[in-house]
Image (cartoon, rainbow, N blue to C red; front, side):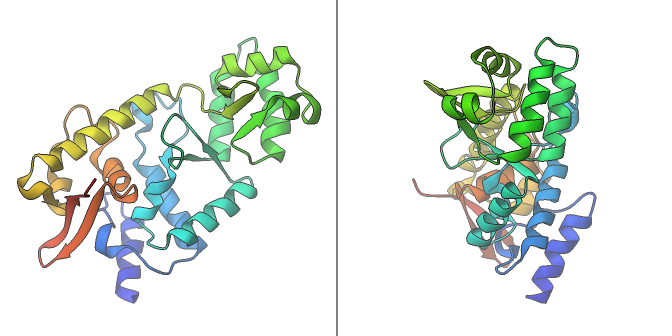
Length: 252
């Protein structure tokens, strides 16, 4: 176990890491290791691709590719959310696929995004009141009007600013302004990486071989980012072998 812990720690610290995934995930790790996993995944996010206009965005399940104890991950992330250190978002993926970012990064990028725009004051009011006091990922009209003191017109401004998106009649998801391009790249990139494995013999590939391949142009977020995605989402099985970890497409 000590050797495995060192392997993971080295992977977090190195600037050009090999992926610490598959058979080298850690079974019993606490909050410190989970926060390290978050920081590592954040470092994989290609800021320049989005002109540094977005906060670093990761998927909650990507953490599972680094820390085996999913219950511990869920507990730690929920605690970080309740403490206001991270925010979670439902950005059009399936119900279990939540986007995660650090709150300070989210706030700073939102303020940059709305700077000089007519709804900037309303957005700042939202960040200072709602975001600072409520960790929820969605809000209904009753709470927005009565508890947080926003008018219908102000809610419309928040939607126009991209801070809220419509969930259903009378409720909204918390959102990342400008994240539509990220979602598009994410979906296309995942499909492309799974396609690389699909085309391989027996629909499996050595992780080390996959890491060393040149990514297709559609994999704009980078191979490492998507490898953590497909492992954490259990779209592939990780099989330890004498040659290293093999990724095999999971059965439907």
